[in-house]
Amino acid sequence: FSLHLLDPSLFLWIVQFTCQGGVFSFSNDMLLPLQLFNPGFTWNVFGPQGLAGSFEDTLSGQMKHDYFPVTIKQLGAKVTYHDLVEGSFQLEGVRVKTRYLNHTVLTLGYKLESGGISIAYITDHEPFNHRLAVEGYERSYDGSTNSEDDRHVDFFIGVNLLIHDCQYTAQEYGQGKTGWGHSTVEYVVDIALAASVKQLALFHHDPNRTDDQVDEIVRYAQERATDIAKRKGLSTVPEIWAAAEGTNVTFGERANFVRKNSVDIGMHPSEDLLAKQFFQRRGVKIEGKIVLLGLECNTRFASDLKEDLEKDKLTVKVCEDVDSILEACSQSNPSLVVLKQSISGGNAVDICLKIREMGEWGEDTLFLVVAKNHDDLEMGRAESNIIPKESWLVEPVSVAYIRTRVRMSLLRAPCKWVRASIPANEEARLVALKESCMMDVNQPDGLKRITRVARQLFDVGAACFTLLAKDHVKLISAEGLDCINIPRDAAMCAHVVSDQDFTLVADALKDDRFADSPLVQGAPYLRFYAGMPIWSKAKDGQSYIIGSFCLLDQKPREFNTEQLRSLQDLASLAREEFGAISAEAQ
Image (cartoon, rainbow, N blue to C red; front, side, top):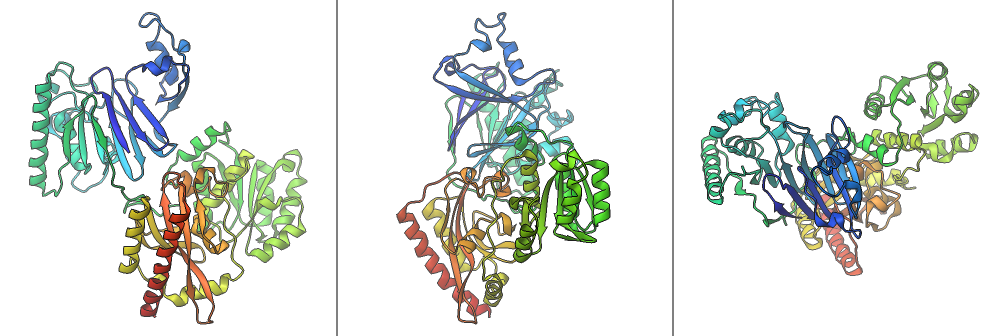
């Protein structure tokens, strides 16, 4: 992941981020690279949607004949414009997050994440509390987020590089610059320290400054940061430098996919805007459609599912018996009904038949039916031909999976997330897992060494050992990924157990089994997976796959025969280590 500053001056602000998948450019004021006039180039231009028009309209206004001899329609290159709001989206191997800044016009700040490296780019920003520009920033003593300036700092906490507007000094700001939409050096140094950033690039230099004056400001910023860190007992101070044309910064060391303060991934997608962008990519609007849940109302599962579906701007009704379901259907005409196969007062097949008879809308109603086990699933499929086979699900099933299936059903699109089948020997396998006592261990030294070696050997974002329980996956040792729990139906390693073989996913976005998984569409944004089964011998004398040894990355990868042999060798060492740990635990 490398960064190249093209021009950090006042009116030519463009930062070019180079990573796997291409070059992405974000600019604040208008800069027309010569390639825009070349018919051989294709550009995707991203910028904030204005209050009175699109981003393209904003750029078109700067290319009116009064200012420029060529209109935006006459550019030779193929240009696609993308209006942005506050939220997040994915560009090839880069995750981009946006946040509105405090400027005289509508402006966005950007945070880019790729391969565990993150960069924040804050072009034009003035402290929300103008007093902080002169007096400096101090976080609330209780650590709470109680101001817009606190939330501004939270946006770039822990980034590898913060590029931030700091046009003025505090003295200059106090001389009539209030409200002009720019920050001071003092404020920016303080927020960089508060956010624990690793590097700070002073940016948006005042055009009246000389190079010597910029150098002096850098020295002043470094001294201020050192003094504050010493006074507060901080162990690290960010490297501070001035943005200059031609500067190259390369980040080689990978960071963890998921930070220690993250929620369990896959349980509840953390990006509220994910659904909106998901639907926009397909050109479909589902906002306001009605979904009825025929589930037990008082369960945590029903309430969590309702909450997540409402984030997709759906209207959700929950009913728990046949009569209330049919009454709600006749009154609200839902687009989709989610049912337990067996429900108080009847069963899903009978309910679907009655809904179909309610009129024209009932004929178009979509269904998702959850069976308790595989035997009930096969029986239900055999009894009914009005519920498509792909509309039947089997427990255990997570909130995230049903949410994705609801989305896909309403989009009339195939769901590119295939849950691994339950092995025929599942009961015996779970017994073997319990007998191994491995679920009780955490980050054992022997496995930790193997994951550390694997991450370095294969140059991947993360390496880990997983155990597949009945309804979730536990990471017992990981390098580059925190040891967290993942729902079973979202875990790629469940396919290793199901297939009882090595599983390779070269590019998850192009794999129909995983493209719509929350671990691909959301954090940690997986693109590559390689998993080797880990066997354990049970007391019945048989060996069962209890988990897997996995390599993960946020960019697509190829995996050759030599790498496969190396992974097999490490997996063999791991099986021996598993046996020793299990014997000691027992």
